[in-house]
Length: 402
Image 1 (cartoon, helix red, strand yellow):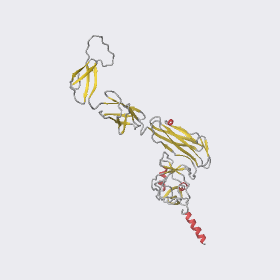
Image 2: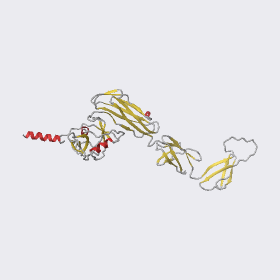
Image 3: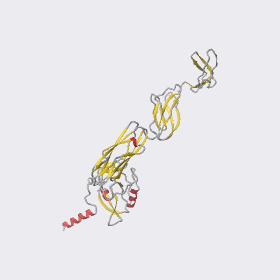
């Protein structure tokens, strides 16, 4: 009698979800794009959560989710959802390293309770147990993609997208992708390829192409990016398999934050000599300091219109404006005028056209020169013209002595 009662109690405990949960076999990887992959099941999980919803709203939310470049998200079935639990943990019964906002509460599955179809199965992530509730209740939601409904085997590659950190010309970087086969049968892998306008910036080294990957086996593909030109870099990695194509979006940024580049040379307005240590601001970007040859170059900037300002001690501030077109390099040379002393703005005569003139020996002629002079904003009393045979002082008339 006592044995019958004990067995009945155990049956009730198991029926209502108070039995011992299954030890999690999840092998999790944070993809760095708001998703977490279980490499054992091949399932990719939403990392964040949208809050509590009714069952119908949970289904609609997951089906409309666009995350990490994918739009095939769905509400997990009860078997998939339970695979995420871990009976070595409770409150919550999963690893918060990968799901930092996880709630110790019920989460909806897509599986309807067969006996009462207005109920659906839920997983309690406080202790990892399974039960069912009315679909009108508000419970938490975690969407999933990959795998097949009713099956935990799949073929996948991680990470599912790669974004390289910004690089400068001459630099390179690499990332390793892992292709895993958790299907019950072997999978044949074809030749991996790159496509897209910037595909030449990327290269591959892999142990997957033209191979057969056994069930529970894996292989790796190394993606390299090498920068030769500034601007954004994107490409699509395609891996043909006997189960269909696997694709990975590749992206990177060369030279900085945008796709427009500006450079030029800064010189002294009078001597035409190159000026080093000039600070050049392009809008709020910079300063970009000229080298000993007077050259400056920005990192890649967002295209658009900018005010350009150049400053150097002992020189007047130079200001200008320029519109930088996208995906192009622009040139802006700058001449700085001394902030102290006299500056000769121009010196002209009727023989200043650049054409050659010839004069007969012993024949006198008269040449008139006009000099435009700025003497620190003041009017000089006289200007001295110096030539090989002597010098001449000329009184001024305003700013233009003749």
